[in-house]
Length: 487
Image 1 (spheres, rainbow, N blue to C red):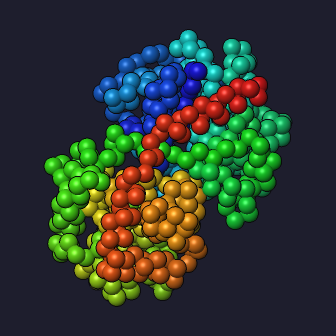
Image 2 (tube, rainbow, N blue to C red; image 1 turned 60 degrees about the vertical axis):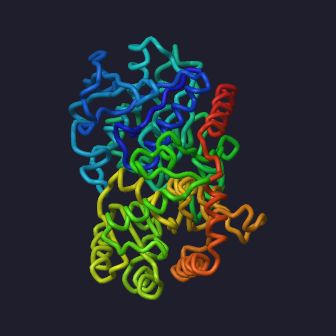
Image 3 (cartoon, helix red, strand yellow; image 1 turned 90 degrees about the vertical axis):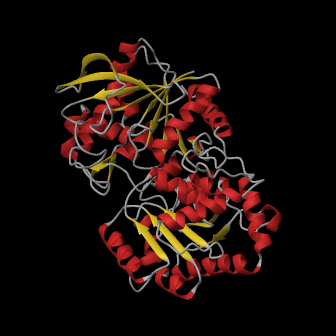
């Protein structure tokens, strides 16, 4: 099959979260299964022009206007997946992806991403390459099937698949933005684009793509409920027969303690964990913590926002982080950026607590060292469509502590579940509640101090898990076949 990934992000070119990892990793896995996969994304100001080759200047017809654009080409690292970049000085040559900072949005995002969705017919004709599948990712590409319908031949045998990465981000805009999309007011009704009086790009994608996927089976069920549907549960239940949950995989060429270049020379494996001890010492030195092998080291790498359970951790008068650090003989490392109040609160706590070390930044190298050096990894998410860090943690022998939701529920098994310690891979708790979070953290400390054999077993079980991309790629190929069958 010819498969075109239409996306706002892809590693290593532009990334704000797991979407970027998924697009590139899935593309590579599909190529390994013999598919012709290509990626179309914006040429942001942050993308290096060094290895780009110019293809053509062209225009995109948005009905009431024509937008100037250009097409450039590159490839993903070590895999040869063609990546086509849509250049628009007007819309994409600016700082950041969705906004100038991770916590902000550009006011013309409705215009920017409608242009990305509208570009594919011209791009494909320039390349003389017609896709069987248009695989769109999240709200920025929600309008793709509308432009497909307008494109007509030779795209009349092209099907669409829409992957929802996070229901919390929907692309909601005023009706006055509609003319910029090149669509008519009548089409907003025909394509069911409106939600509560606003254009909703995510809803449009749900209502109009041939098939819909989410990035874990549990999340595909959760989002059909009032609690997790973010107002779109009715649309999702309406399309339930076309909805499939497929757990993301892990790119083990990048995330593997036996080969991870960021851990060198302290590589390790399930058969020899000596390197992990060295990584822990290096991490303690890096984060200016006491170099004590006997103290359990807990870690988080996360966006510092409510979705990630950060309030249960550190909201003043509510969160449990300070009392946990004061009352238990532990160390805690946190890496991330996010809401200003969270960043400030964590900075304050780190000045008061000698066993808490915080870095308000994103650092790929440090992320790998944290996975390699930590003993436990905390993910107290309110919801988690898939989650990747728990999958990395399993491979690195860093025991995940997770709330039972979305992909976390699909990938981490508590020893209290059937199979017990022989199958268990981490600690799981039920509710987004600070007391439950504290209880599960205390449970992990108790196990560390009193049952080291159980810690070794959890590590062994986790490191032997296989979350490679091949099974996920095969599942997506099945969805593609079903989408083509629906035409």
